Length: 106
Image (cartoon, rainbow, N blue to C red; front, side, top):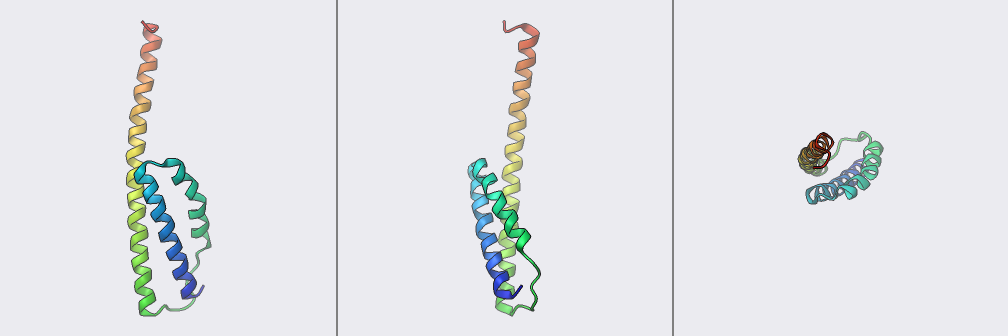
């Protein structure tokens, strides 16, 4: 892959993962999941750069990679927080069901 194509791919990935970060931050889980196939498609289509990028291209790639990694970390943090909240809700529901079974809904 040439440098221009690599930069285009990094730009596309940075834009997409930015959208995913916003969805995760807003708790829009269906939207986050819907963006997953596009993310996988972009990642699997990326290959090594065949040529050494010039300094400007290299700096832009580094900048984009930093943004991608930062957004990825924020997505993971938001989804982990959501998973913890979901676990608490599920445990609470399980406790309520056990109490209901034990005491017959008195």
